[in-house]
Length: 161
Image (cartoon, rainbow, N blue to C red; front, side):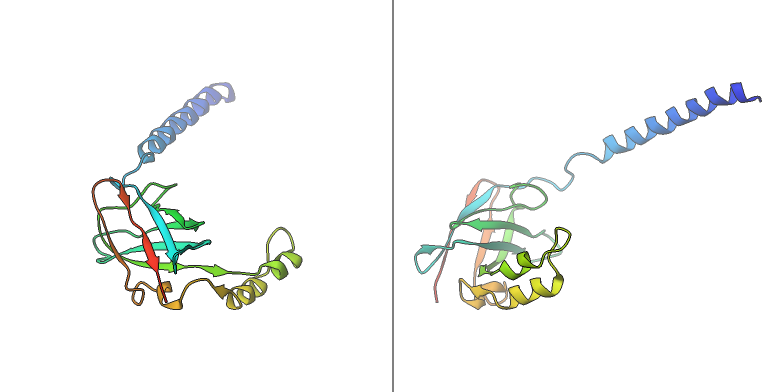
């Protein structure tokens, strides 16, 4: 086989590999996790909206469910499992909520190359002021539970001391 006849064979082989790659990618797309349901609501502490934080839904049985989480902004949250606001699987959950006021001014002041130093970030988080009682930071001590049903779910949490 001379050089001129090898080029079309090589191009044909590359085209075949490219086609196979596209088929594999097409097969990998889409959501294979299953149906999730919208979960949203409010988080208040002593009657006031929690200004910011995170909420975590941890399945009662980790062998059956999958955790979901959301960001709290001005008391409002919406859960995600694998994508933006895609909801949670039906089932029973234990809840944990983390709401801290972190002063990142020293992290920002010392930033190098667009990122803060780990030591500065750790120090800022250790010095963070809790916005809610510490018991809510663990699902084992929060006392909060919820059931996600196969529909849109509005679940509010009124935290107290």
